[in-house]
Length: 302
Image (cartoon, rainbow, N blue to C red):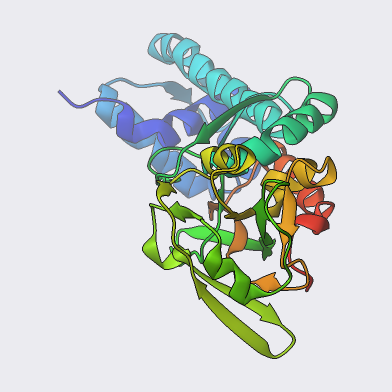
């Protein structure tokens, strides 16, 4: 049995003719020709096998069948208007849900501060933060934003460069201080078990580069746990500055080779390249980028 699913334009055309009392007025309202609108109503009558209007040269009037159909057509039109208004309100409001994914160590840094900003600026917003080193599929898994310390090449995503994350080499206070990279080879180090290449530390000072291959008995894939092991004096560590800036300031950790910079990762704010962006989405993006811009001490100088 044929359904009405493919005849919504015809149904809306019928509704407008009935509401405005004529084909001419309805055609003008819908930006159609009178002939196009007449064909729409005729197709609907053929589908339903009924006559919807009594037509004379001077006016039209609904038939009994037309009056019956008008109730349903009016309901459909009103429902579509309500849906549009609701979605416009939803897209322009500070409510709704925003989903963000990031590596766990990044979340420990930005999560508390950004959530306080969202609380103050967008009090009705709900935020879900996924802290995981797994690279989520933003489109398929319905994430709004990701923070990624890698170049993004997915054509379905937009990647906004934030800066190069600043790494530092730190140790417990009882380790001897040094500003010479070669000395680091003699220190027990906390090894990165996730990527072997990250155990080659490239330190830069002016035009001079020094590569240090570190060694140690303890390996870990988590920056957070590496920081704890370092605080316990189990070895020197290379970690992002944002993770240890408080401990350095409070002298719980000391920085080794502070005159050198370390080659590190670029940080991007990544989000789907959808055609339509809600005002909520744009406001969240602006708040994230504004907060990141204010954290210049955790990035390498431009």
